[in-house]
Length: 173
Image 1 (cartoon, one colour):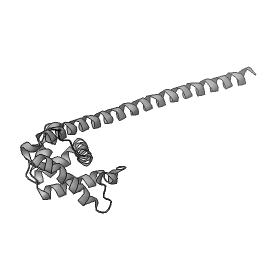
Image 2: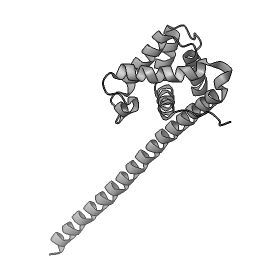
Image 3: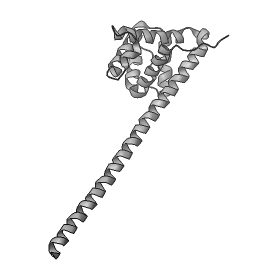
Image 4: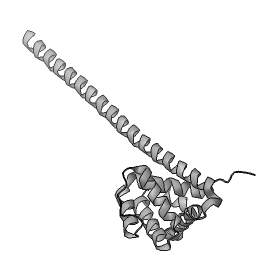
């Protein structure tokens, strides 16, 4: 029997939720707290993801709608965000549908244990990839700043040398 796999839209939704947890953990915690899914602040990203996925398993429609609103609020300005939903008409409903689809995976118990594990693994992998991307961006920025400083120093040295050469030439002449 074939092992069940996540559909592409579910994978995209999980990726989006993972980045939401990594980038806006306070918002996710507040949302979970407002809907009475937790009163304990997560210690790390893994615990935050676990709390979010556990809340999704409850299939609370109000929570799903609020989560969809949070996703839209935080990511609407990102390039290609609209292509995630696949339905350009009502983005809230489209994102809520994707959230509901992910919620279905976590609410069907034993039947979807493999899908649940795959979704959790993908969530953690997405968060790690996002964090590595952020670290690489910081490193790239530091390299650009270092190159700028080196060029600036070189130009200052050449400028001072040129001025000294002109001054000497004017005195000698």
